[in-house]
Image 1 (cartoon, rainbow, N blue to C red):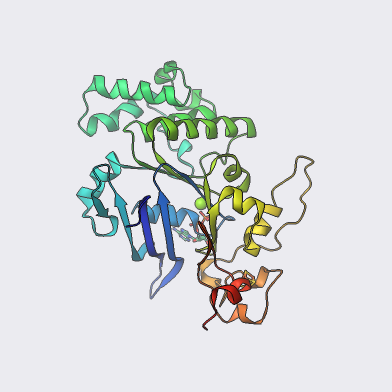
Image 2 (cartoon, rainbow, N blue to C red):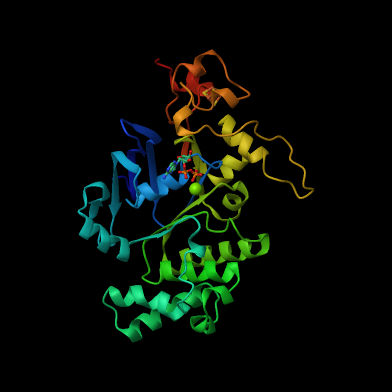
Length: 329
Ligand SMILES: Nc1ncnc2c1ncn2[C@@H]1O[C@H](COP(=O)(O)OP(=O)(O)O)[C@@H](O)[C@H]1O
Ligand code: SF4
Ligand SMILES: [Mg+2]
């Protein structure tokens, strides 16, 4: 594994199991997640972000299936584990102590008939904590998201969306995991609440020294909080780099389109993307972005561009740069 990577993903593919064959959704993703960073994974709806998130957690549910790849994670003691090969019981333990997953839509998954205290402490108790330890940890976690401990006595319907999402985040971080994968964490919330929760998430990263993979369709969210960003299109990474670099000078035409589509203060969209992301049953040949790309040229519908390093911490998968990086096909 390379120096600063907490998680090294190589050739990760996942798909949907049909009667006769698997339709690939995520195709050969290579990604290093650095310790302590907030890595945004961004792309339009249907680009395979949630499939990638669940694949990283090895929590795909049929018909979703893992196809191939390796995911090597470095633990606190410096040892590494290969997540793809880990038996289920060890994976459960790891998920609990080291990995935490906040699935898309989870703020609506709280049990309506249980008070927050039960929901937060039950899992901790099941994993061997005493009632008191579980309560202490829950209270400490609620503080991280600026929630009053009074919410422990509430039922989910008594809380606003923002408070329910904070309860979910508090639960997810109560065991102080090294890696948190959060999928569309703030999507259903108003802009002010969204901003507050993102600030709390950044504070959690600082306080716990956690690494966060933040999955979102919203470039604005990435701009607010992420250190680096992986732009995903049709199951592949189109561009990867620091947020500053990518916002200042997006190199992949899809990244340019996404940034151009961010609504301005005036409510005007300057230059957006035309059309929509293809479904996995209709991924185009060659560069999967070619039917929508304003800069498409003859090579693009035949040959698949691979992610090439263009600068320090800057990777792009686009034929526009082949001349500089040597085109061999
Ligand atoms: N369980 C499933 N059943 C059918 N189609 C699915 C399932 N999961 C994902 N897909 C399809 O795979 C594609 C990628 O989905 P997803 O990973 O949820 O994308 P994103 O999170 O970027 O919106 C979409 O076209 C979606 O319809
Ligand atoms: S490879 Fe071609 S179609 Fe794809 S993004 Fe680059 S220029 Fe556009
Ligand atoms: Mg999703």
